[in-house]
Image (spheres, rainbow, N blue to C red):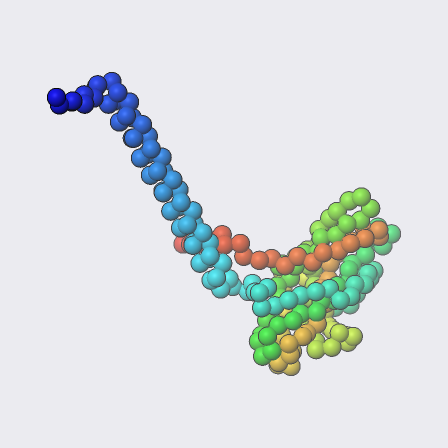
Length: 199
């Protein structure tokens, strides 16, 4: 006697719905994974592209080696005199920069910020001046001051040859009870876009 398997229409519809659900879920997972992989690859491409005037902190290392507070300073192009000396000072932060020997680097003032703690508070000061580079730490380095914080300096003939160079960065409006300072250097995060400009 032959036994026939009969699929009832109601059960067949339920089985088809469950199969369709799993196919849709699998498709969505694959599409999401593809989008994540593509976005990650795009981000890696963007981060590897040369960003104009950005320091490559994989090749250049910076550390604070000295810190001084001043009420006045005569720079190459301007003079600073604190208007509220009972409340603020300017900070001159001496930086040691390690770079590949023979490589020219430039530092943009607008890429540097000093984050600091004072009392129970915290604040940020943008770089308002940069000295020239030198190969020795304890030498006088002429300082360029910029009221808007837009300017840059680059290594010259002698400092370009060295692996270790020094530079002073100038920050305004530092409170008297400053207790801890951190230097931040702007870095690309992989976000970019093309533009046709504004004309």
